[in-house]
Length: 281
Length: 281
Image 1 (cartoon, rainbow over the protein chains, first blue to last red):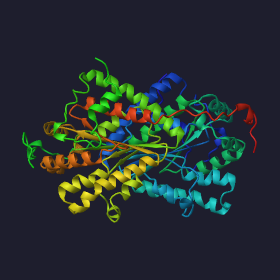
Image 2 (spheres, chains in turn cyan, purple):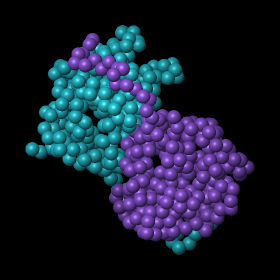
Image 3 (cartoon, chains in turn orange, blue):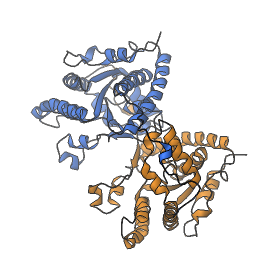
């Protein structure tokens, strides 16, 4: 057994742009990608170290940025992914934005206004914990906007992400695909452990009771918005280790595609005055 | 030898509020606090792990925030401090704000406008890499504002920090105190190593040539703005390990003072419907 190549993980998990996609056929266990859990852990550790170095190079370059979008049902592990995939990176040059229910200021603008405002600055890695996709997911399931408005959003989001890509922000999207049973287990865990209790929100059970509707909304969002410039990856998330390992492979791949390099501006030490041994004032 | 207590490190490095302070008498080596460098490394590692846990508790509580301000001459290690003291923490709930030369939008408002805007949200740890103190440091040295305006700022900053403290944001300030000689060594290092080259800015040499003026401005800022609610710590920074270890001790102490706890809202698993075994739609 060996760690699967980045290309193999991408191929297994991508929702192929322009091709039929069926969420219900997607595995949630992750065993198809990482047979061996220990191996997944090793892979994750290695990739986290490489991601750390690539992030420093991105920061040093200061010209482009990477935006990682995480979407998934409660307990699918959005926070856990951030914690593990970026475990080696310094918070300098990282921006995590958790999108919650929109404020009145945000509702007073179009739904992409707050999203655009949160795009990472050049040189940074941005992570969206939830994103513009809430506006075609929960908003669709709960009927928070008229259906014709929601229907128009998929193409608007594609255009927005294309714009970001053309202007130096690479967008990579992950749907954390957890099974209904595993979610039940994890919600109950939250009630048992004192350091997880704060995460428990009785409202999550309400979303859970609409599981099939949410899956239908994800099916639409992923199939309509997986594009060549900004593909969706559907990541099996019943196993935390396999989920993290798969995402780390793909994040690393996205950063390697950016062909980052340490630049050498050719400065010569002897051409500068370091003011040796004296403090002038 | 033992790791110095948090109280001992604080006592050694604080600029005591309301008492005379002389920057020129402060050590830059760090050997007075951590005699043994290996021990400093051990201390840092332990504290980083505790800081990680306390940060999770702060995030879970979601009511208060911590703001760590880092100021220091170029190469004093603001980025390095962030990298090491917060090496164990997930980027979720961390906000690093690097203040650069103000934009025209920022210059069109009072100097605290952009600072207030960057204050960490409740539950978060915010780190300022440079801060409102630039407006009494480089601005003073370079004469970017009239002297009477600058003179009024110290009390304004004290009032602002008091306001933050009274509203749930604890402010801890560190001056990274590097010696003139050590800075010369580090600037030259930047020219030699390809992964440090991007940090080299010939303009830094211009600041270096005004070392004594900068130290005089720091002397004023630290002595006038070290308050009971928001003290300044002057951290010897010629040794990276000792600097990081000292800051980690003090950050840990500040977080421990917040008396964070995992709260138990007393939820009972049996009172919730987890919708076992069926997906409703």
